Image 1 (cartoon, helix red, strand yellow):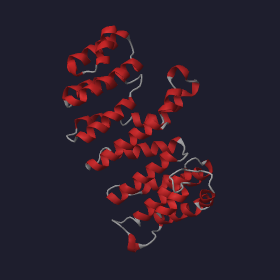
Image 2: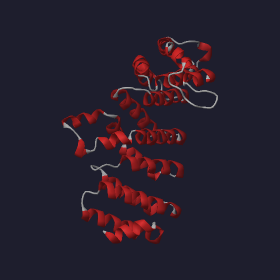
Image 3: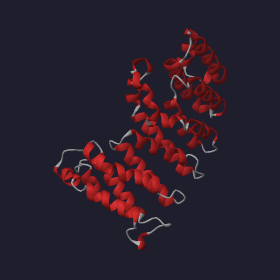
Image 4: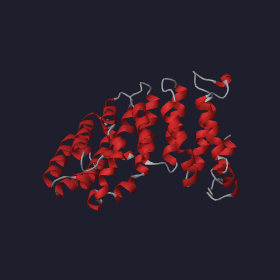
Length: 282
């Protein structure tokens, strides 16, 4: 199956991708059959001999989802054909078993990679939000990492829809994946209190991407609180990132100055030179 995935991706032996290659075109004709096979696995089971924890052949489900992800990328028709089964996987897969979580993770990866609609992306973000509540740090780390990657990949779109350039249909953004992610903001912030440094670092990276004009004051306060407790060797980088957030989203000059003074009070000489000079300028 790994070889099939590589061919479906349009890759050659040098690792280059050709989304119009004859091999990929041939695989695209199989999308309806792959969708049918995956749906059969969900509804009636494929082979009891391969069940894991009550989930029918999770290894095959993951491979099928991977193949669908590669075929759906940059192809609207293939993406449309698989949207329904992806929604079915996302809503009907058992989450209490690791096998189910593996399937859901691959399903989220597929939803984010193909040309799915906003409703399906919201569903994917909510799955990752549930992963953040899991006691398993590996699952939480994967969720934070995936969320950060998703929002970073969509950053150019978010910048294009900044408030000052929005049209009258801006309210529809409440149904977008970005808005869904904002609803999990409190859970992400709570990850800054985790004993595991890797969880804290991934949560920190995600928070930088979550900041906007509406929540800049709240999230900056959380970043300053973390600055007090974080390892000293991380303070310079955090100060630089906070400065970027302040410069981009500051609601007023007074708030900007107060925030930067607080930043220097906490970090002192451990802050980067550009942070100190910017505070002096303001």
